[in-house]
Structure formats: C-alpha cells, structure tokens
Image (cartoon, rainbow, N blue to C red; front, side):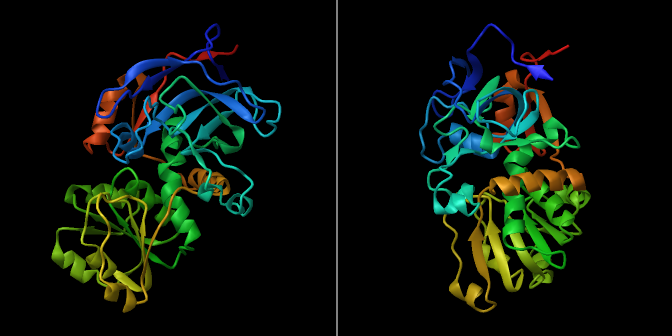
Length: 350
C-alpha cells in the first residue's frame, strides 16, 4: 500500500493558465473531504487527446486555470464517512466523469453518463496531472489485479469510449466491424471488437500501421487513400466505429456498410458531418454518436479487458515531462497512448 506524503495538505499539480502555453507547476488546497468522497494518491495519469483540446481551448470552454487529466490510477488515501465500497490503500481508477445528480431519469435508469448535471473530472475541477485528487467515490472504480496501472489508465476514458458503443448498440460475434483510425482510440477499438468475437477491419490513412493493426486483432486492412480497397470492401461491414478527427468523405464510408449498418462516431471531426440522405435511405443505414459509458459499463469494461488481456500500448514518462508528452499527443506522434507517472509522491507503508 502507498500513502500520500505527510506534512503538506496542498496538492501539487501542473496547470494551463491560458491556451497554447506550456503547463506550469501549481499548488492548491483541496476542498474538505465530503461524506461520499475519497482522496486518491495518483500513481499515473494517461494523456487523452481531450486534454489537449481542453488545454488549447479548441472546444471554447475557456476554463482556466486548468489542471488536465482524467485517466487516473492511484491508491485510496482518505475516505469520507459514507464510503463503504472502497478501502484505504486500494488501487482505483477515475475517468472522465466525476459526478452526477444520481436523481434524474437518466441516473435512475443507470445512464449517469447522460445526466444533464454530470460533472467532468477536469472541467470546472482540477484533474489528474497532479499528486492527488479528491472525487466522489461513486465514480471511482477498483482496478482488476490483472491490469498494470500504466496500461489500465487509458482504459478509463479511451477504453470505455470504444467499449460503450459496442455494448450499447448490441454488436455481436457474428458481425463484421470496421474501425476508422489506428490511434489512441482505434487501437483499443480493434482489440475490444476482436474480443467481442467480431471480424475486424482497420481503416487508416497510414499504410505503415497495417502490421500493428493486425497484431491488435484486425483481420483486414483498408488504406483509406486507395480507391480499390474501398471498392472491394463495398457492403462488407455491419458496424463502423469512427475514432478519426479528420474530415473524411463520409458517404464513401456509408458505402462500406451492409443494409441496416451503422456508422458510429466517437472521434470528433473538426467540421460538420455531411452525407446525402439517399446514402442512408437506400440501405436503411444510420449514423450515431456515443460518449463514455455508465458506471456499470466501466466496471464491466475493466473486467472484460482483464479477462481478454486487452491493454493500451503506452509510453510512460515522468509527470515532470508533461509538456513534452503533450506535444507528442498534439503532433500525433504517440503510439499509442502517453501516460504520466508520479515518481516522488509515494512512500511505502511497512
């Protein structure tokens, strides 16, 4: 078990004070621990591309000072009086969502991720590029022993982002699934779809990723700039999971679908998605989107990943190298996830 260093109540963190600027060292005093809260000493935190979007204010939220980070794995150090399901010293994870009202129709039906009052871990709150974090224990998840912390961290956002639509839209072992983009989300999407028992096709603009895509579980590979590849794959897929952020010819992707096929967005293109209506009507095809999953889905996803040995391919760097790691993500040089590791905040209990 590990505990927070004693003698200093302040939390050490890295903060963005304005857009497009390097993160700086930052210190803050956390709010008092609530009855449902836990304090988690952070072992490691993945860098999601959403962190870059927040830092650079790509989504217009302008929430500075901003401490990013929402793919957190650490150890429970303190807990509030109402916390029963977590123990001091237990290894746990925190993802994109840190809270919800737990009273509305969506929460009561088990869709806390769709709660109108949902709270993000690092939007309006200080996130995981830090030594500790205080968060609602009901959105904190035990990490299965079979998962290494560094590999588990990206599952808490990237993993659930690709798992949730496969689960929600009832993707079955008999189906043929395409994954657009072999990157931070895509390499996980390939693994999960393969573990679902599906025949997976990876679709990428980078032909040099074919071998890795096949190692992750893809049976087929489509080079997106090759018209012949697209023509040969016409009408071959039941479900396409798009992790891409580029603006693509989406009508050509709809042509890859069989009747009743579905194109699902988890990546966010920078421009509106435009498709001709006939591309949908003719084959009764549909377009949808999917956010993260519910608390139940996250628990299931972690257990599923442990069972099927699904893990993120990561590069681990010290938390002190946060800016160089962010630049690799920003410039699409990460293969496939960057994870920040705290090296100085842990004291073994003997």
